[in-house]
Image (cartoon, rainbow, N blue to C red):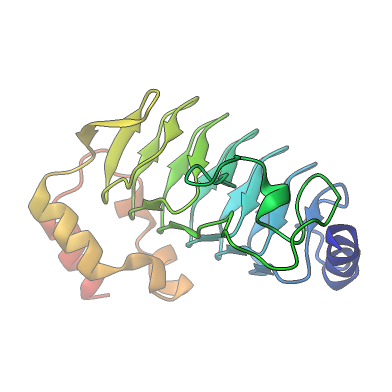
Length: 214
């Protein structure tokens, strides 16, 4: 079944040269035309927003990724879970279609995948693992090698195993203003007009106000 979905996806996205011909993207995934998917990456039942990219050998499974996100190589996003409340942790007892390839159950008693929601302007370092059901806020940064098991707030920097927040990129008032601005939804011409602000190493409230007046 999965192979058929990927074959349909290959045909659906064949003329999109921003998706590597060596990537696996199923027909249910929504990939914006300005997004990019690297070699050997995989997207299953996922969405990838404008100007976002996923690096080589990374996986998006039941995940929604916002705009302007940077996902490095070898990331695993949206991993499946196994039942822990039943007698066995094997999915063969609770899922019709399961990794064993055998069908013992006539119905599904367990949901293996929970949606992952990743905001806009998120940077995820190499070899990060994000468990199913996790929400990552706008502007967050996840350090390389982290394992994310809980939600990460807007503009937080999280590292480690399990991932924990070590600091925030900006003070609370500036974070609030950035979220209200929602610059990632502004027209491209407005963003290009304000490139000098995006190149500043120290952002302040006046910069945000100037974008609003553009």
